[in-house]
Structure formats: C-alpha cells, structure tokens
Image (cartoon, rainbow, N blue to C red; front, top):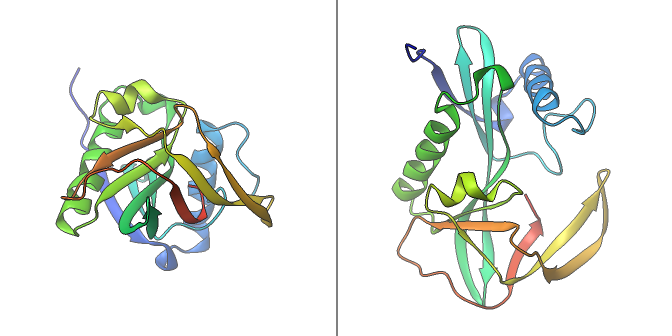
Length: 181
C-alpha cells in the first residue's frame, strides 16, 4: 500500500480560529468518546499544537504545553503532551510516530530538557524511548474547569518521560507547577 502524503502544521494556540477549534474537537471526540463536549482541550489550553491533514481533513492532533516544572528541586523546561490522537481511519500509517518525532526534534532544538505525558498506552511510547517515572507527583487538580486543590501521589506507570536535553532525570518530587497534561 502506498503511503499517503500528509501535511503537518504547527499552530500557536492563540492563532486557532473558532472553526478549527470545532474541527479539533470533532477529531478528539472520534478518538476519545468521553471527551468533554464543545472544547478542543481537556483541562487547559495548550501552548501550541501539531495538526496533520489529509487534503482538507484533519486526521492527527498533538497538543503541547510548554512550561517549567520542579524536578526534585531543580527547575527544568519541559514539553507536556496532551490530546495526542490519530483519526481511527488513519491509524497504523506512522502518523503518530511522525508527530512524536517532530515534537522531539523541536524540543532538542529549543533546549527543552524533557517531554512528559500521562498515558495508559505505555507500549507505544516505550518503543520510542520513553521511560516510566515513578516519582511522587504534585499537580493542580482541575475538574470540569474548576480548581479543586492540589493533589500529591505516585501515579503507577502512568507518567512517561523522554530526555531531550542534557539534564538527567532525577528521583524525588515531580511538581508540575500547575495542572497535569
């Protein structure tokens, strides 16, 4: 089967018009049945997004939040991945891998120390060099767009990390300095 030619766009969040937010929501809802209605983000709007198109059809999405975290007392820059998905009709065509590789290259070019995400799909990321973090975590707990407080606990095999800079991953408290992705 011939590999299709896809177009990838990087868009800053503030540049996304309402009609594109609707298209992003529709894709997220196709990929995640429990996705919140009417939103193109889960907890907080991302810093930027990578969007993949087949002609005019939006078929892939990866949201990135750029922020600083506190890793065992050290303040480090990270990219946090959220809402990463590929339209079910387009899966197994290396779109997800291409998106991830693009974000990893951007992180290295921009001197970002780590890429961090929360997932239940560990094997996909393990094959691409991501490792589990067993660090105790602290984050701002948001539900239904309301702050409920600060949560602190270990997230068993749910947080995955990939180093993209020279900083080694450290044991100790992983404070997200905001909500989790």
